[in-house]
Amino acid sequence: MEEVHLQTAPADFRFPSTNQTRHCFTRYIEFHRCLAAKGEESGDCEKFAKYYRSLCPVEWIEKWNEQRENGTFPGGLFQLSLACAQVPEELKQGPTSGFMTRERESWHRI
Amino acid sequence: MIVLEWLFLTIAPCDAAEPWQLGSQDAATPIMQGVMDLHHDIFFFLILILVFVSRILVRALWHFHYKKNPIPQRIVHGTTIEILRTIFPSIIPMFIAIPSFVLLYSMDEVVVDPAITIKAIGHQWYRTYEYSDYNSSDEESLTFDSYTIPEDDPELGQSRLLEVDNRVVVPAKTNLRIIVTPADVPHSWAVPSSGVKCDAVPGRSNQTSISVQREGVYYGQCSEIRGTNHASIVVEAVPRKDYGSRVSNQLIPQTNQTGEA
Image (cartoon, one colour):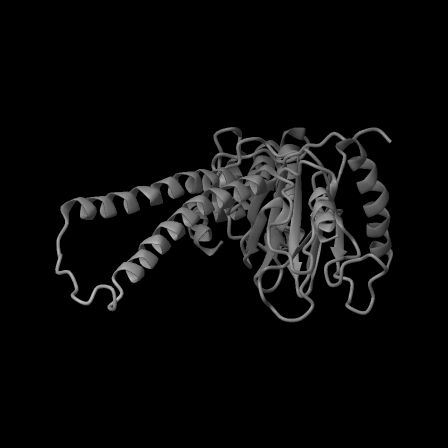
């Protein structure tokens, strides 16, 4: 059996402390924002998926996936991040407006 | 005979608690080595103060005994001794504080990127370990449960209430990130030889970094009192080249079994 290449989510200097809860949550949101911006076909978002799967307990991921399906997920999933341009016009309006306040509130709940 | 036994015990690395143990278990990580060094540093000052204070106390009792010295002296002021006994006690805590803070922040700091992430999830009363670095979807996960072997069940040579059925396999000489979180009540993930004790708080995930320097089996226990069947923690460090085969041979069949059941 050949040696396995060991690789995991890197240390992120936005989250230097012992508490890594937000690290996991942020990576999860980043993945879904990336999907919203670039679409599922581009393989650019897979690294974020790898990061959040490494950092988040499976139970949390399941809960958040369920919340996303029900539309009750507390984080803003469609925010334009600096790295991802080209968000479809319909995503910028509609039910996603006001996501900034929702996201700020969600930090307190975490 | 006892001397021989001591010699023997100090040569063999002690990675589990033993009866009537006084000192720490042998260090397996640089952090634990630092903890032990700090302990010895502080003990230097501790013994210095103990000897000095005892000497003053005994000397005072001896020389100022009421039979030897019936009329007490009435000295109430001495500038030199007052300056000395103010300055020195304020310098000594600094000599203790500086190495202490150095160690504290070096434990906290994550300087290098970890090579693997292991999630230790506390349950009443077992632990689930997740190796999720290679998952390609949210559903599949390399997960297994680790139960303490009950008191009436251990095989010959196993430690009572320390051994588990599935050990955590980690590569030696590798930077590990351990994510600690519980699924129900507060837990704690502690391995004395590795110098790790990380509380697991519901709804929060804590990380701790270790780098085990030698191969071996390290025993720990949950450090949060929460009823019977305290879940034990057994970390088995294997050489890095064997890690892949150990994980895939040992863990994947088990996860498949649980998946079928």
